[in-house]
Length: 170
Image (cartoon, rainbow, N blue to C red; front, side):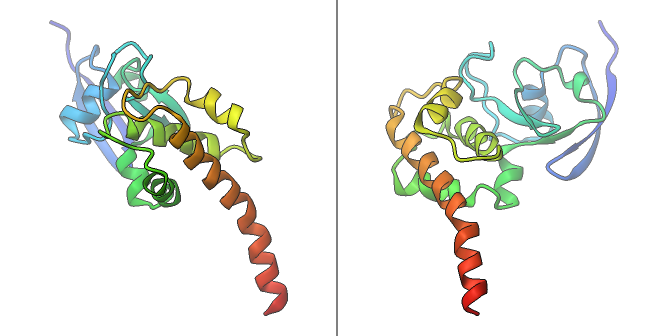
């Protein structure tokens, strides 16, 4: 049997120190050890997107990442994004557009949307579809999801202009 490895990382803003088996995936570590169950495991091959998390600011498949690889890193899960309210507008748009059904894929889709909308510029519908190509959803189809992300992208792009108008008229 392989000896456990000590890892130190930051998860959702909190320092975490644990011993993990060298073959434990980050998804299993988050779900089983830290009880952050918003990260789902579906295909366990990096195809469905249900396990997406942020690793040092990049969206990664936690089912393909060993927990030991994250030593010294910063991880953010769907719980962290929700707690910080940085995806509140995305969540609201998903609700308004009925872009979620059973919810199994939703955390990964929200991670994808957050990653895409964190990039400069306003993504086209084609860009949104391309970004979502790594997420598998059986319930909704994708039009409502694309609509919701497009709405948020446009709203965020319009927000700086609206603030400037408010500042000028104040």
